[in-house]
Length: 295
Image (cartoon, rainbow, N blue to C red; front, side, top):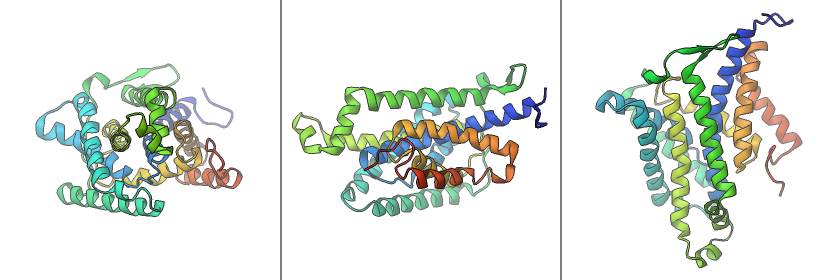
């Protein structure tokens, strides 16, 4: 079956699926950035490096200790979350009241340190990581062959993103988080440990990046530089969705992934720049982003 434009339906659907998988990574990474910026007002440039660290930990767990994919899917985010807690307690908490540029420069320095250390150990060549046996193979949908692992990536991303949005926007814990960033003294008066809450928020935000890294390990070859390829696009996603907007990051990440996939079908040369083209248009028409609030 072909469209009038001469593109076979299986080829079109395959690119849409690839775009949706990329969008799932964009959504999870931008969600973590939005949580950290929206609640802590920190531009976390180390997000890409911590995404990469999650993937490297998954590979190392399998290679050195024999830990399964499923074990590392839980363990790697916990380890990276602890790393995030250390970063927040030893560095970030001293610059919260300073201009955003200080947070960006500090986290950029953290990125260079993490990438430099791992690059000296593993080099820059990709490390192969196989999907778990339960997710090998593909399913024939009639109009296309759907790789089981890619379907899992999209499903896991949607579940994690939805659960995070619900927790922050619809629960009492989320209300404390939002109130603690706007008026910490008032929240502390109710017996809430705001500094601890802030620390755990940063740890959770980077744990989301590590979770995405483990999901990406079987799709993208694991490399100390793999975070560099995504972080600029993810920042563009956050800007388009609205800085600090949880829902904006999720919807925009998934949507831009699909748009990127369609662009590869119709005009492949523009696929690497279409996200930034959309960002320019959105900023001209709505500087606060699609889901952001005008100040």
